[in-house]
Length: 123
Image: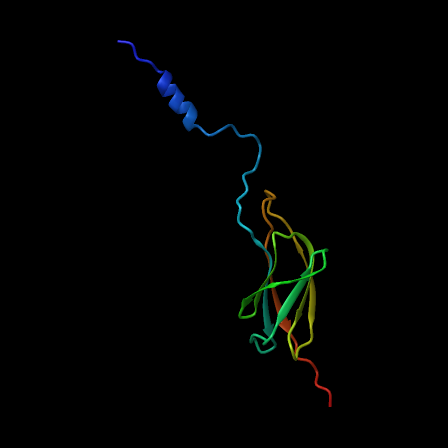
């Protein structure tokens, strides 16, 4: 009795993944560049807070997630300047440097807490 191994070999060849070509397979998810938590001096969420960022192309509004949480940029790396403002508070300016993961696929999200100080009232 003769047995043909050709069909069996074809199954093994098709079931194997292609050879590693050195390319990194990145996921399609988008990661936040900077995640801000904005609070006032008492630890509350300042009403009407807004945040803007500039990664070199002009000011862009950060995404307001509510409850004092913002995302400034998605998959934007490098130096990012951020301004946070709220009525009755002094504006806060900061600069963060957002790096990339070791495989280069995504940014390394920077977590940043911002405390807004109440404005001095004029007499």
